[in-house]
Image (cartoon, rainbow, N blue to C red):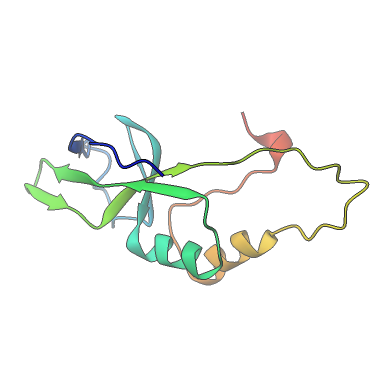
Length: 117
C-alpha cells in the first residue's frame, strides 16, 4: 500500500444525530462513507475481514463540543464478484452478519443483494 498524505477529516453531527447513544456504525449526513466504532473494527478484524482501509476523522458534536476520535471512516477495497458460484465449492460468510448481531453491534442494517439500491 502506498502511504500518502490524507488531510484531516472533520465530520459534524447534525441535530437529529444525538437523540440517543452513539452507535457502532454511524450515518453522518456529510459522510457518504461507512463510519465504524473501535468495537466494530475489532470484531471485523477478529473474524478475518481484512479488505477494509481506515481513515481517521474527528467527529464533532456541536451541542456539546465533544470531539469523538474513536471512530474511523471505512473504505472496503478489493471487492469483486468474479466467482462462478455454480462451479465452485464456496462457504458464504453469513458469519459476518451473525458475528455483528451476536456481539450486539449497533447501527448496522443488512440487505440481501437484490434488495439493496
